[in-house]
Length: 188
Image (cartoon, rainbow, N blue to C red; front, side, top):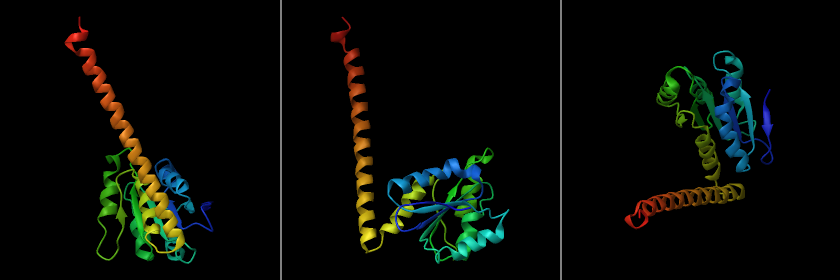
């Protein structure tokens, strides 16, 4: 059953995964979409265990109002590519790390798509960046919603910048204190 999260008039991002065990990774995309006020639906759509439903999901996504699909999968990771083969919407693949091969198998599976079936791919476990990439795709428009989303993304980037400055200041303070503590004047 699809779980919908309200960010406006209806979900515009489909957040799907091959198994509910992928949710701890994929939830990071959901959190950033929530933070940016972007409506999404989340569901399990296994390429191997529910191929008919997976194809139906991809074929009907645009008609249901979705504008971007984020698909996470581990192992053979066929879900992103199969969805991309049946929809004209942008698909962002998230390689989900499993206990064997640490997600490298998933990464290589998703990134090696044949010509004509594009899938944007983020890092192994990079669902947060997938959510941010989906937001940027949605912000590329010229309507009021896209403009407002660009403003929220700019504020998000400014917040990251502030966090990085604060971390730099803490490190400078720490090393300055260490230097001061080791100076000959203080060693008595």
